[in-house]
Image (cartoon, rainbow, N blue to C red; front, side, top):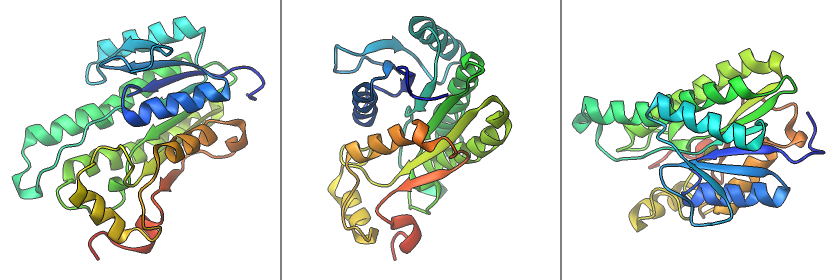
Amino acid sequence: MNDENPLRSIVTGGAGALGQTIISALVARGDRVICLDRRPPRSEHTDFIEVDVADRLSVNGAIDAAVNKLGGVDVLIHAAGIMKTAAFCDLDDGELAEHLNINMMGAFRVAQRTVKHMSPNGGRIVFITSIHGQLGVPGRSAYAASKGAIASLARVMAAELAEQNIRVNVLAPGAIDGGMSPDSRSRQGWLDVTPSNRVAHLSEVAAMATVLTSFSASFVTGQVVAIDGGASTVKAFGS
């Protein structure tokens, strides 16, 4: 698969700040894009299909409708998810199950249905996870477990789907401007442990997502790409 023709792309979680920025980057590349989310994006120029990633029937119906509208699918960027905070000893079964169902199982449901529609020419899948899946950040055990599980799933998918010319990668941002944790205390904590001494811009994460789904990355699969200013490789959180 090359990028001579417009790519047909599906973005889940496309109504969020990061999702909308990713969609804008894909549209700028020339992609035909459909946004899947529980609510419409602010932009009226993006085709939208409602989906609940926690529900298999909803996922199947939304993916099928998107593929039908696009006439196929070449790219999936899965950015849907939730994050709630709770100390490990206070975390209950329901809170953990909710994160695993929406984040990890949601990614599984969406990707599995999308792969069924990818052509023999192949496809590109990127899961947006988080550096929390690689670091021990207090209060984020449920979120970290769900995001770490996606990375493991992606590696196996990459190995199995390579013969179908489907590449699978993970993009793991650290703190982002406009991300899920905009409070000042959390933001300062990330600044303290990030060698670059800033958070990522939404546009930087979106740009990397476009690279990973481009022909330029045609030999990249099964990788977890951190975009965190060095926080995960140079310092331990809280050190």
